[in-house]
Image (cartoon, rainbow, N blue to C red; front, top):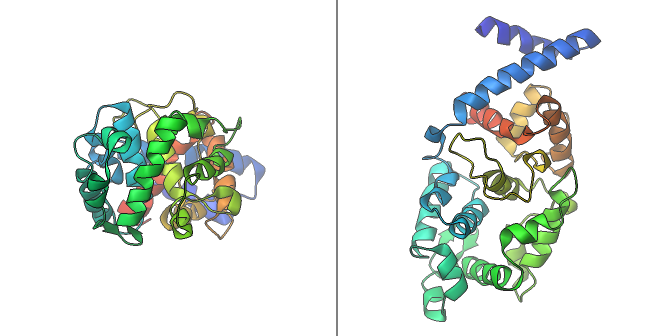
Length: 277
């Protein structure tokens, strides 16, 4: 079995110059990546991943708010992300949704000491205030994000969501914590968050709470690790991990599974982080 995959990957690195080999190798690549998805898309994946934070909750609004906050700080060392994510949600009490919609100034002050890398307590306080605005004035996170999705992409919707999220008064520096793909960003964290909210495959990892968005419209979260693996597998040629690279990766992953291309995030992540591929 290992020899089969080794041979398939040699063909991919060679460039797949023969048209017939291209078809064969694409099928072999799909089989290889599907195997990796099945390996890593399990409940065992949850504990050491930022997705463990929204898995603390059962109410839809608690899950989507805690997931958004967890995804916002999801850069750097995974153990520290998970530790700080749980600490952040502990500050909000039993229900993030209740805190967001009914907090007072005294409760907000308790958030001032939070810090994760460049995301500090003042940033968190603004996020709580903006989330309150989103839920009280705009119908919630799902409605705001899903209202601007195109047939094949969530990227324009992320752009419009960022505009909505920063409608209320804010310091300019805080805007860096929500990326904008229309400004060239890969928007890795929010694409990861959308995977959590939209995909539902009964494997117990992603939540599948948002029915207004199709898994086929999602984009793969792209960072240094997934980008490097995608290039080694012939799924990505662009050297920068930016919005154009996301578009290229999406196009290739959709040839492997047009209905659920972002499931391959598990394969790229596992190959990069766990297998050091």
